[in-house]
Amino acid sequence: MFNKIINCTFFLLILILTGCVEHLITVHVHPDGRYKMHIVTKGDSTDVFDTDFPHPKPNSTWASSRHKELSQDSEKEIWTLETQGLLTGVTLFTKDSTSIVPFQHPITVKREENWISTTYTVQQIFRGREVYRKYPKFGDSLQDEEKPDSIQWLPEALVYVCSQALNRLKFDTSIQLDLKLLERIDNHLQNYFNHIETNKLLKELEDRSEMLKTSLKPFLYQLPGDFIQKMSLAMEPFAEEIRVTTGLKDDHFQFFLIMPGMVTKTNADSVAGDTLKWAFGLSDFLNDDKVIFSKSIVYSQTRFQKLVLFSIFGVSILLIVLWRWNR
Image (cartoon, rainbow, N blue to C red; front, side):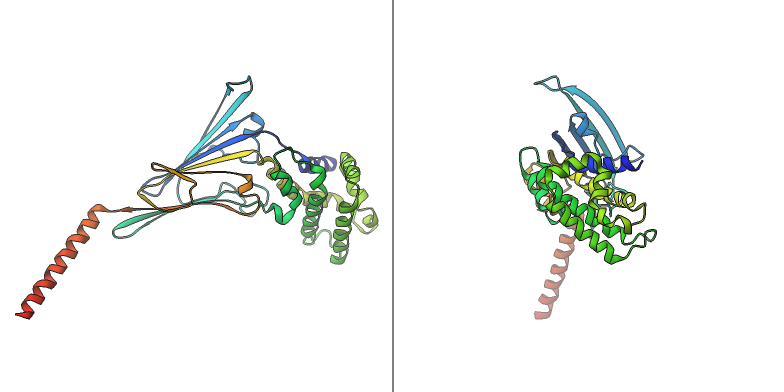
């Protein structure tokens, strides 16, 4: 079991996905504030059904369907996954909004009504992956149109993953290691991965458990017997985070929004009739958030007419009073 954990962790770390997938997201806001979201993902089966951009699971809110067809220029199978639901308020799409692993894209739709108008506000945030804060070389590789070269960014990524894992182990009461020892291990691993010959590192990754034992060899006599296993488990979410980010490299998103009334503010890329459109990819949220925002207003004709009539009536009374006063 331990070897499987180690192997999967580092396999996910260096796995590069080369497929291309399209995500079409349509949000139609209803006058009552509810909104229908329709998500369509197209691509080969590996990309459509992976965990990089998972669709909500079918339940009482979400309905889902899938089908496949042959592409026009080849015999390659193209899969389509469609999911739609009628929602209200805030939708998070993930059970754990604090997790670093999933690609998070919460949406908020607000309806605010006053006496003569109703305003609608839509905001969806595609959370930034903070790649350049964590491992800049990995970010540069993702910007490359060619297949990313793991040899260039792998040592830097391993330094980050190991450092974050050690930070988590500081709070593991079952280990009770001296904090100064963990800091020494952290500094040692940074030097180890930054200075070791990259080709040698790749060869060591073929036997991941031995790689960890080799890198931690100067400290093994000071560590409990299950330390490597605990460290590998602590590294797992950070390695998975890299895999999810890598899997999004060739994903393309198109977001369509239809709102009631007149749009008063938006950061849409384009407007066609009553439909607002955004088009983006991983580079738009590789580091910082990609924010989709729009606001519209609907005036109540009946209430507006009443306001005009009351205003005219009030002005008329005032003029009459002034006229009689001046007499």
